[in-house]
Length: 466
Image (cartoon, rainbow, N blue to C red; front, side, top):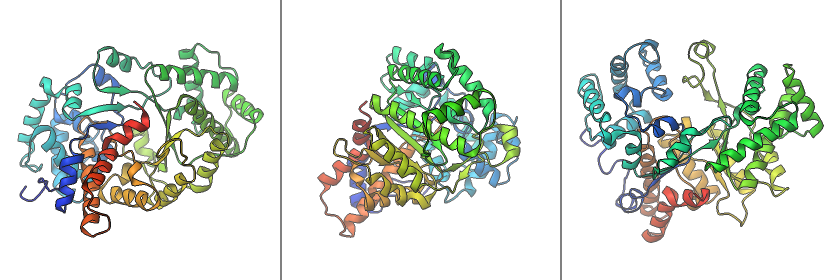
């Protein structure tokens, strides 16, 4: 590994290295959006081998293996764990310049102290060594989080979830805060009326409310929102193609909800109005509790019908979408703002053509009550790589205030993904170090160091008020 992944990795100047090692590297991790399993944290499990913690559920790796020509049997199929890892090891040498190559070797080095490159020749030794370590107490889920200096983790949870695992984690006195995130996507998923009605029935059961009409629906959702708040939730999340902000009346939405409950398919205009109403109601709930709403915008999901039928969603068959963003997003935010009901909001975009759109949009609704009230979310999903992170930082710097940015997250299902914070921090420090070298910003290391620390942790801590 001569010259690769050394101390200077991604840090091209001495000032960048000072910023990283004196300021960024020591900051804790505030992971405000991820898909970790609360049950695995509550049970403080140990993974039995590297495949279980590294490959299961990781659609980034699945996509790379498929592109390399690996049979699905060795990706999501019935091959054993070693066979799956062996095929991943065959793929890794050929993913050069993909962020997975960096992530893979950062994780091997930071978690396991392994500096060898992963390939077919080293696969057996690496698999055996890591799997043995994973079985030890030091590598339980909670100890992994402790060892990576994690302070807060926010999971992603359906409104009908019992939150029993979050409750247990808190009762156990685990010092890392593991907080739920309210994600009511299924509450507005009118694309499949049968599934939506099944979900409404489940909501009725957990709230003990007979949901006969739209008012009952909102009452039940509010009850769960209150329950989440009682159990530490401070963040909501929505997965959206775009924002929805059609005009509607309460009478119209009541009629549409009645149509849903009768099992009838909606007209396109009715679907848009219902989604618009739900987005507005959820934002109002968030504002009243002082929560932060997250809007993940721009994914085109489940494009491969064959794979969807075989594996379900989140199988690695999603892509960047191409939707109108600016006008509906402006209408949605303005509808809330003119009623003084706009909560703190993070907007993530997936299509790089929309980065500048959203960076300018958030500037329309900032106010003096909260520093960085609206946030351009960190580089997300397909943009979570060196170029995407650099572009997000450059765009925010050009059109907003980088100093108020709340920094990075993992957006991951793996407990080995905390090195993504390191990856981001190195890129951030390198950008600032190059600016100093080029004479574009003054060499005020106290000021710039403080800004780096704020972006890495302090801004997020203050923003979410945890």
